[in-house]
Image (cartoon, rainbow, N blue to C red):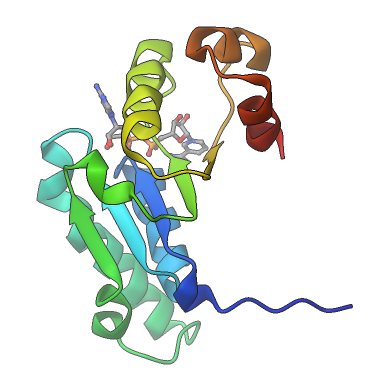
Length: 148
Ligand SMILES: NC(=O)c1ccc[n+]([C@@H]2O[C@H](COP(=O)([O-])OP(=O)(O)OC[C@H]3O[C@@H](n4cnc5c(N)ncnc54)[C@H](O)[C@@H]3O)[C@@H](O)[C@H]2O)c1
């Protein structure tokens, strides 16, 4: 049976607005999701919106989307406040592959995001998953959500 989703009703949080974070944000906007994008470091604020707009411009030029970038950007909020992640149905983390950074970011997500939520790595750590789960101290149900 085919299942359809109304992406406008599935807000997505994303932490980390470098190359990958901005690209993924643009894709989520193109798919119709509201996106709450957290800039974990101030320098992200200097370039993130323009970079995302550029991706949308390119997609528009190539005929991948029907509307101009402004239409999709209405669904984007860029913030420095992790509290704004509350209410997101899914939270993606796109920061550097550094265990201390990931640990700090995940603790903030865990603190402020509403539950239940599922978080996902864009990319796995070089360390094993069990090492990482050991660091977070997550409970088994949370680990299961993570592994889905
Ligand atoms: N760029 C690629 O082609 C590519 C491909 C596959 C996987 N990845 C992976 O995606 C992840 C992000 O890569 P990228 O290319 O976007 O890197 P990037 O250098 O463009 O961006 C890194 C981002 O990490 C965050 N960050 C940096 N220092 C931080 C700190 N101290 N605390 C919290 N957040 C911090 C910031 O949001 C920063 O913009 C990495 O794990 C990388 O291995 C990247």
